[in-house]
Length: 184
Figure 1 (cartoon, rainbow, N blue to C red):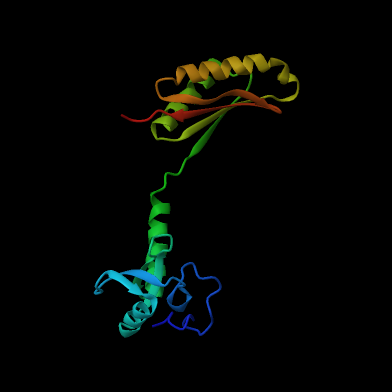
Figure 2: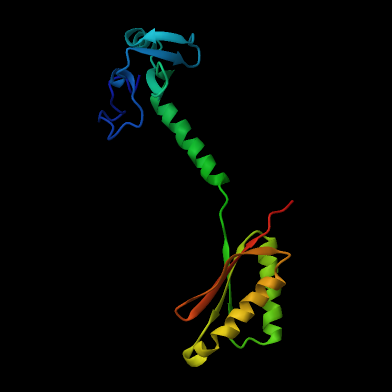
């Protein structure tokens, strides 16, 4: 009956309850669900009485339903289960890894092939590739060479990935993004 007086174990009221519980529920009638509880529509007084008899809390889980759906459960256990679900969802979320490959405007053939091999490996592993040409000093005069280099790079990686962003000059860098192709 931890949340029945709307206080936590230390005796302090919670900062901001995420759900309405017990006396905070303002609906006249509620639909009750829960373990070892006969589901049905009850008045709020009856629902609170049932929860009190079971020494559990009445927690509003679906306030927009008509009538609102309340669950008879230990509120702290309910919060723990929700945090656990959120953690699982976060763990299953796909984390996008971006690998960078840097070129100069006058990159020779051997270096280009070496970096091309690495980029295809990154794309095969499911990572995005951020390829960029860095212009030092007066080499900014060769920005057309840099764009040609990046477009050739994208063309050579066509079977492994697709261009997400075409070459774009930002300050002294010309950047292009390549995303891996979806596996069939």
